[in-house]
Amino acid sequence: MSSLLDTIPYARFLGLISAIEGEALTVTMPFADHLIGDPMLPALHGGSTAALLEMTAIGQVALIYPRLHLPRPIDVTVSYLRSGRPQDVFARARISRAGRRVAHVLAEAWQDDTDRPIASLTANFLLSEDND
Image (cartoon, rainbow, N blue to C red; front, top):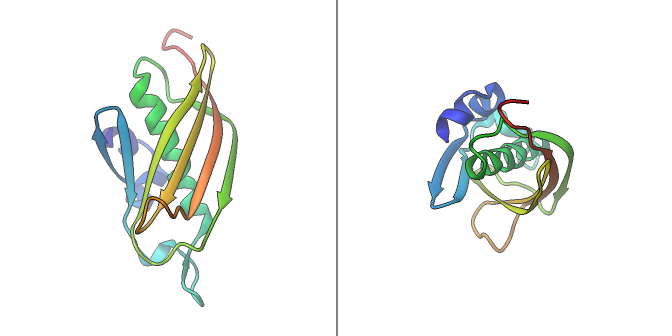
């Protein structure tokens, strides 16, 4: 799965690292100064947090459905629940429903405690076969 993230330039820019346990993908975004969006707080940039969540969701779908092309987002909604502090961020996604053409995915990002997410994502992805 890390090779999947290595193929996405923005994932490389964010320094994303993936770990797979069974069918669960956990992605880590190590802290770096260029991820700060508000230096006065300091707080992580919301765009980097959203990208982490979206790429985690894409990676989870690709892990479960390896015969498919990378899933394409139909719609993505990110809710920012609290400010991301200048430290590593972790994300995990789960597929809540998948049909023949569309998968609905939920993802959460957290820092210290999985029960206190800093952001969540709800997204629908278009699934396409290799022969489409």
